[in-house]
Length: 300
Image 1 (cartoon, rainbow, N blue to C red):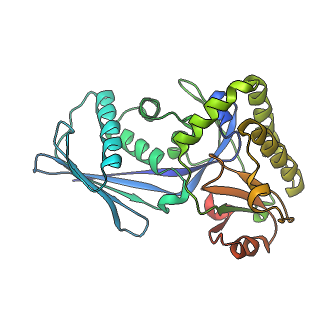
Image 2: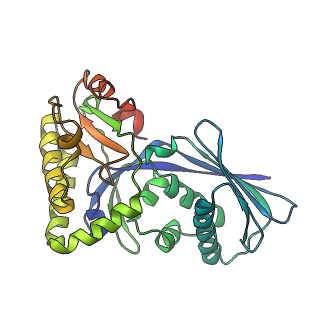
């Protein structure tokens, strides 16, 4: 018998970086996520296959039942997977059994919608453990992505053990003026978090977290695109000062005048949120950014 599991992808709309230090942040699950199937076998090992959105195998590995690596197509990925599995089985207080495991992404690997968090949540479902316990054992992230993986509504998230998770609603009347644009670049979240950790010692972190929390509430209550534009610009200014980086709007799209642009998660990669109008998608495509997804097509 084959067991099947699935988790939602994620996007962090407010509070990036500062969510790590207690800012209340708005995060939303995405329609696309990752599935996970497990079938018992008799070959005395664990065989692992990871497939991409096109159903092509991008990673394979085999482990013995002590989770020693027998073979793999990518050693660094295999070592990370072993680390996750060892911690997961420790938390479950169970022992590995012979099985064939297949994971399948529903989005492109470079989209940054949570290939790691959906995997962790799927493993947690399979082994019947708390996904946050597993997350905090193997990751330096806030855990908001784990919250999105198993929830089908927008959430207000505050880090903690356990985290504070508040179901909310975000369905703005002007959603047809909102788009997600992929920057053709995949950021490594762990490196971005490490860089932020080095920079935050120079700021009043509590004050910045309070400001980010206030901006989260302002983001939620914005009743028009113009109101949201003002909130986004304040949010980008806050993070720009902390990270000592210019905003994506300034760096890549300085002549974009139909709205504004907000980084999501690690600055410089993955998706950005864009406010604009019906001609906005073509502006970004003309700039070489072909992946432009309307708000309502992205969120669950």
